Amino acid sequence: MRGQGRGFGRSGGWQQADLPPAEDAPAWFAGRLPTGWFTGAPEVQVDRDEILVVGTLPIQHASDASDADKAGHEAGLIARFREETRDARIRVAREGEHRYGRKVSWGAVAGGTRELFTTHSAPVMTRLRQPERQVLDTLVDAGVARSRSDALSWCVRLVGRNADDWLDQLRSAMSEVDRVRAAGPDAGASGDADGPPAGSDTE
Image 1 (cartoon, rainbow, N blue to C red):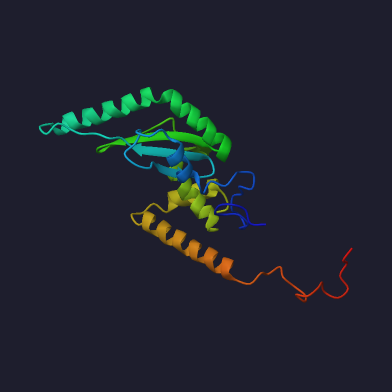
Image 2: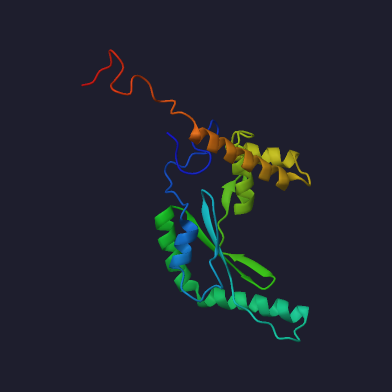
């Protein structure tokens, strides 16, 4: 039976049958977060371990601010947001974790400064954050590697400038395979459409 998310039902792919689907997570967080926290809907990234929510904070620099002043202003604004919203973020994270069965982590962007905090590190031979885990899971889903550990070893051997472009091409190819599979005939259908095959047990 094919489950939710990429990788289900594939030989060697990770299984998430015990995890709730999270396709609606971006919309849920956009609706759940208090008005005024961010300038728009937050960026929401999901994998099997973590939901990372990163929002852009409103900011306006003084017209004569230097680059150093701007960097300091942005860092201070993120620090203030982190402290002032701590209790509310804990409540939202608990709701999100209950709804989606994954850890909820946070980050903020102010001007040219981006900072992640309370992020979740999953043990995969070493501790990796979400972007690195997504690389490993893509390789496993595509059958390039048998496990995250195998995928990590494969990545070390394949260090190169074009790794990101290659992974994008691989994801696109996998999406096309999923589309073709979904459009194909039902392999489980058999017999006459008006009734069960001759000799079948109907009781």
